[in-house]
Amino acid sequence: MTILDHYAKEKQRFLENCIQCGLCAEGCPILPYTEISEVSAQEIQEDVFDFMEGGIPNQQAYTKAFACMECLKCTAGMCPEDLNPMLINELIKGEYISRGLANRAYGDALEPDSTHRVLASVQVSASDYSKITKPSDKRQARYVFFPGCNVYFQPEIILNSMNPRCLGWYQPARRSSAWSYPATTFCHKKDFISLTRRLRSDSYRL
Image (cartoon, helix red, strand yellow):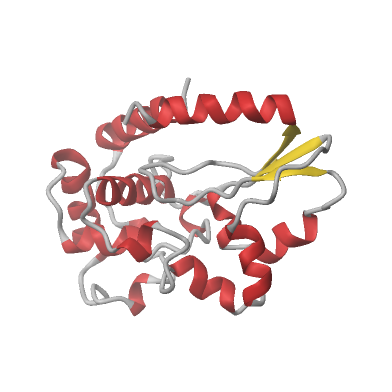
């Protein structure tokens, strides 16, 4: 199963099981500080459902998805139907970005005012940040480092784990597609080349 197959399956599971109770929106620590803070949690989730079902943009679904800081709180047993609200946020963001309806700062970690850069600026220096946003020069090494898109939210962890002596290539993910790489991976060079080709092939199916 490709990641796109997984996303399609989760979308269908959401549409079949979400009862629009709003518990995920109610428990979100970020939404009270957004422009939809006065909207009831149930109404927010109803609009999320409407967007997932019909694809018609609305402010509540947009804000709930793009305000998400991926703290994982909503995934810790909050949903009575055992759904993953954070994944639904990702699906909504992917739809907005792929249709050109979202600000570039939301979809490209290299944009000066992107969420990723704003958060990273309080964690690491500009010179260190450039290390995770620019591919390294190719050189002989045993391993390749292939980070997921969340590298931009936790740059200090990635920088601490990078060992220049064992890395051959470093290729950052840009989070500008309608889906994102789900994990940080160490692998052999030949496996990296094969993995990259497979991921590109999957992304072309969008």
